[in-house]
Length: 272
Image (cartoon, rainbow, N blue to C red; front, side):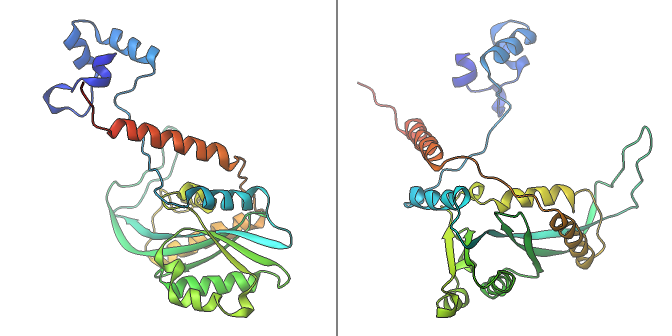
């Protein structure tokens, strides 16, 4: 097991294989596979991670999670973000329909017919999604969408928006509009940097990606936008809230353990 964890694979390989490890020790590959399985070792796998370096990580996470678990009274809470550069991809040949014994087919190559940006605000309480498809995602585009949220939300409710830290969300047009006393019901809550997982609308985007544009062909951006809007209309006809269930403190504790492990892994070895 120590060779799997510490030794360099031969011939510049990225990871050990059962055959390479078996040859190193003069045993069969099935023995190596069994040992790895018993010890939970999978050298061919690599998990992706990113720890937030935000100095206000704990305060921001507590703020956002608090909105999910105990939203304020007489308020609408929205999880907002943009899904940018959604491609209108067409295929180079007609697709074949599914039939018994054969999957539906798409050519492996494609033509790009442009892109669109999707702005979406998920109502945390109801699951309803406000949206716009736009050509860009500048500060003016963000402001236009904020105005849509404002028009859609009853005047007696405060508006709390959970969003990330991209510059367009903090642009001059947005800040100037929000500074008007008429927008005193607006409250922005920024997630910690590098924590897209803390924004519920990202989960909704993943559902959209699987349901609407995946494995389809679009001859134009307008056709792609129509498909997205048609699917969102179907979603809003019977919206389902996405529930956040985890308290903030267990997440904070896990991040602290991960930071400690990362520090140990990157600290130079000392010899006495």
